[in-house]
Image 1 (tube, rainbow, N blue to C red):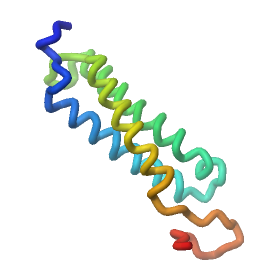
Image 2: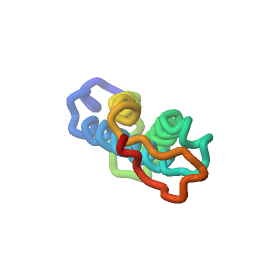
Image 3: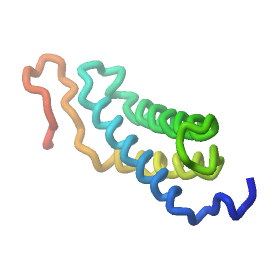
Image 4: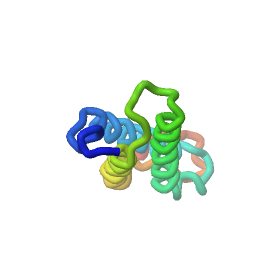
Amino acid sequence: MEEREDPWTAPDKVYHVLFCFSLTILFSLLAGLSPHPFLRRRRLWIAAFLSLSAGAAKEFADHLGFFHSSGASARDAVADAVGVFLALPLSKFMLPRFKTDPDDPVRGIALV
């Protein structure tokens, strides 16, 4: 693929970053809400894996011609990874922690 066909400054790179950023936050929140401690403890790994998998699936579909695009691009994959890595610190330090006490009948966000 030539340089001018898929520049780093193309608008679709922003879409890739935002899409994977959003998916990482969403998957991290969903895993954090799980009643299973295994999923809660590994929510960042799970979120990163699922987000990168969605990006890879989109690139594979581009390669097969399912979308009207210029085809699969390594730069799009890099933009996906950037979105995930930007979301991980937010997921780790800024999102609310969820209660992990199995005996607590109320599930929700711990405010303290």
